[in-house]
Image 1: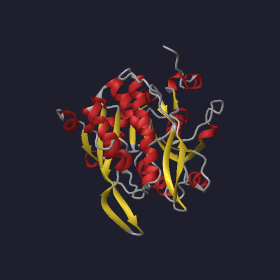
Image 2: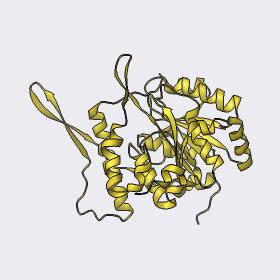
Image 3: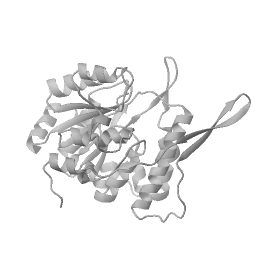
Length: 326
């Protein structure tokens, strides 16, 4: 396998740290840029993320035109804090309320397309403990400075917390290395050049996002890469080294549920693209076990593979953005 894409479409965030140049490029392209933060109980980190992005990329350098929080129904003070720090805050359940409600990160990202105004949309996870404005501007940079690039994805070192105030320099990204990279190696070896396909930080043009479906849960990043690759090819994708990302880490059982959804998304996407003929149905229950009073008891979680259609197919969206059916 050749690694030409890895050499030409991989960048470091320092290549885009001239923010005045990015603002000028934005003006030349006559585009608007939205930042979306999908949230669920992120009161510990949301204020700092909004404060840094607003002060550095709106007040100091007018790169972002809006900061939008799409919330899944937080039971803490996430929404109140986000609004107090100047973000536009929406509950996902209140967006396009006539549609059957679902909960999940992918649902928030999909509904953000209806709420946001930008030609470019930046999606960032809301639990980044070492947040810095490079997490946004470095993903915007390739889209503004390289005409062929329409989607930029982050990668970084992922230290893992091992206890209070203790950190190992590596160990994050376990689902990537144990699930996605083997799958890509087996079926799409060219996609193994994407260092962290499951990273939650990426930016892209609306014209791409609106034409692809969004699984409502953990599978959204996998689906997005596969659909963009299938429709427009690998060359429209870039990846940017953001150096280091610190966030909360999940236990093995939680990662197992994530892996289940991602595997199901991958198989369903291959089936939808006509790449496999599945003879048996996939089940919706992840079966794990807990030791209870010296006996192993099943712990069953139902994880259906629900996905939203391309947003461009939603009549309210087409009307809002003055689109007509082709």
